[in-house]
Amino acid sequence: EAGVAQSPRYKIIEKRQSVAFWCNPISGHATLYWYQQILGQGPKLLIQFQNNGVVDDSQLPKDRFSAERLKGVDSTLKIQPAKLEDSAVYLCASSPGGLAGIKTQYFGPGTRLLVL
Amino acid sequence: AQKVTQAQTEISVVEKEDVTLDCVYETRDTTYYLFWYKQPPSGELVFLIRRNSFDEQNEISGRYSWNFQKSTSSFNFTITASQVVDSAVYFCALSVPNTGNQFYFGTGTSLTVIP
Image 1 (tube, rainbow over the protein chains, first blue to last red):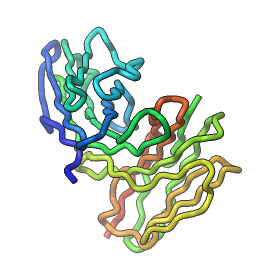
Image 2: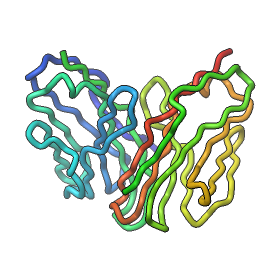
Image 3: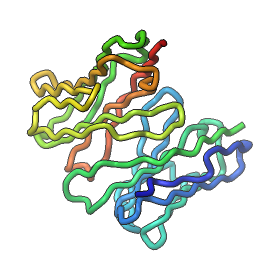
Image 4: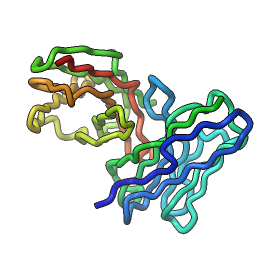
């Protein structure tokens, strides 16, 4: 079974530029998550989708971050404009089933973003 | 509020030594799940184990074992006879059904196994 795919793996941009990350979850997984992991810290949830609907985006900086999951499969996370403090690893995860009960999350390899 | 504490920031051991990674959690919910993930230098978080709050049985999987104690709100992870390939950052996480399956991660413990 293929795992969670993410691209690009690495990205270097200058501040105020825009950047987009792509995630393809495990086939059949209804729930998709985007996390931000700053060096030396644990992952922080940015947004959670259930199919193509948003379940939780309370920690997403909506003035500069946006995410969508059209058709309930692939997802894109965008930052516009980027700031220095956005330098981090952006992890995508997916889990099977609906919101009821607890489902193990499976993570992709992440995208390492460096903002100069 | 939910919280996970991993007090050990970095640990170094010599190969073949045993090592225990500590995890202490906080939640007022009676139903919750605990997880351990491994993050090697490649960056991907690899799922290791999931336990629910109603099952305090310890678990062993090869060189890995987990000790879940509700009385002390701890879910510790022991690696027996450590190997260089065990070098990674290990994260403990808590999930509560009432929060929509949101994960609360600790800050991680960086383990270095010296050959």
